Amino acid sequence: MTSLQVHYPGRKPLTFRRIQAADSERMARLNAAFRLFDHLIRFAPYSSKSHLKDHALRLLNNAGLLPHSRERDNRILEIAIVLHDVGVFYSQAADHGAVSAQTIRGYLSDLSPGPAERDRICSIIRSHHQYVNPSDNSEEAIALRVLDCLDAFGEVGAYRFLEVYHRRGIRPPVIFEKARQSLGKRMESILNFPFRGRDFEFVKQAYNRADQVLGQLAKEARGEGENLGALQILDWFLGINWDISQIPRILWRHDLSEFSVDYLLALNSSFQDLVSPERI
Ligand SMILES: [Fe+2]
Ligand SMILES: [Fe+2]
Image (cartoon, rainbow, N blue to C red):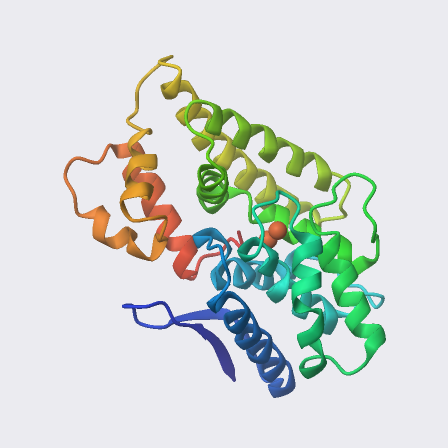
């Protein structure tokens, strides 16, 4: 049994325990895809802390939420998951799917046997932000869109929205409102997906948590309601340059509000993929 490990500078390798398999071919394929991801972003012009390998690993983790299907080619889906956001490192456009597909195309021959499969991987990736009239509605493309939306939920999702919008120059209070709107659109886009009953409860809880955090930030930025000290979260993210692997360094501080401590602890757990009964 092997598991995937991710190395972050200055930290012990993180082991993603739920991505493990006796299937050595699958692990070799995933590791090769992650090596390609590393290679492609190393000298890329832009950077995004919320689109590093842990993002793809959470999508792979959450693939267990997809209903079983004989039609879905999981080999193709997994490669698409690992590489779908390469375009973020080459473009600041909101819909970077086409840039991802274009960037990876010439490198896929090492991971995938035939040209038809390579075309499918690119097509799935190209449509991963197309929530309305997507160019690809195959099972794999839908699965990638759904899994990607799920990573916009929970504590991680709130952090990821803030990282993306702040990088694009959006500042408080607009950043919180925009993040909340975008979160709502993602939820809307997955409402018809056939989750199993209990799984959909997890999804809703994760959505509500992101909405609650962003809602509190928006309220405080407008100077409304009870002040729980949520706004300091944004300052701390800026202080650690959005590197959530640095959260343990913040947590010992005495000047954090209870709201921030709860949020940062949960975010840190999601990042480290601590064993928990929930999958999101
Ligand atoms: Fe993306
Ligand atoms: Fe993504």
